[in-house]
Image 1 (cartoon, helix red, strand yellow):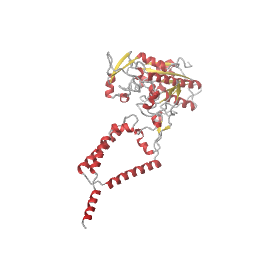
Image 2 (cartoon, one colour):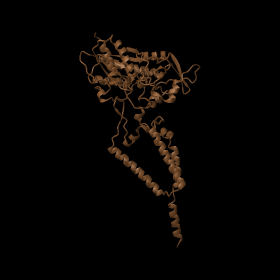
Image 3 (cartoon, helix red, strand yellow):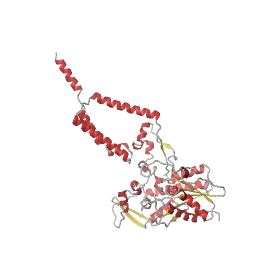
Image 4 (tube, one colour):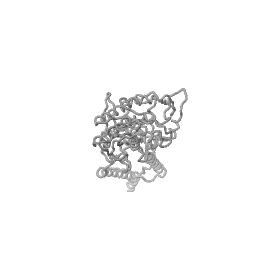
Length: 453
């Protein structure tokens, strides 16, 4: 009579066997596999995680999994299969419920192509960019200054932004002018062209459109489908196909690639790209670009190590410079020019010609200019960076400028202010005193072609 009872007890004990040991081992293995390298190569397009917050989150999950696994192995608490399945079931149910709630009630901010500047309300013009209200009379000679952060000039007091100083110096020369501007940081000729179209679409005129060129970044601004650094904000992009200008990929402020499952929008920047988002990533877009600059692996001669020092300290823009795909602020003068640079110059020239054609169609003209600060480019120099050698030259710079502006009237504004930088490691932007000098030089050149006394 006792034997059946004994079997029942043994069966009951077996059914209550703890899963602590196998579960602990699984958690430790999961923790070891849950690292930044694994996550980045599974869940991102380019195998990189640029967010420190995400890295910390991964470390926290990894620590929790390993610590929990060690606890289960050492303490061997009673973990029953029924309890484990109940926990997993509850988690799955909660996830499904959260996904359903997000799908019904949550409206994620969509991924938008391009961007616009966001100045103070008192410093915004009719188009929301930094500048004075655009207004003029029939007798005014209207100049539209268009460009990137140089035109926006966040480092300048509002009365010293380029449009204000250019107007001041032209008025001092007796010219009856009105100067407006459309300037947004990070704009290449692609978004400048779209902004110009929008300007004319709203009925404004311009007797002269002036494009402020920034050699350090305009070319790759035009070549790549995202902002700086690599794989940043998506943007409208043109391209050359069979020697014809194609595009843009989208319009400024156009909504693109919204996830069908809204819950995924919380992890939008860290998930594998959808087919639409992949088209917007630099690494996918590179398939249509020619070969980038190839540095030398050896060099017999004097080298400058300033690039290496800046790279090691990550000063200024150096934290995001990409020398593998030429999306960096030093590529323009690299010699010999790569096939990719030549492509970018041709693309940029085509965009300028489209802008000029549009300006002419609207009864105006278009010219370009760039600013050359003192002692910014040596005749020829070789730099070492991460055991590779990069050579720049003034001749290559000038050749590239000529290609970029082929068929376009262009001014080189050589300023003399040696203290022209906004801060020590900013080798791109002019401070307001240097900006004023550049606009004074430009006014003198324009005074010869603007009608009036």
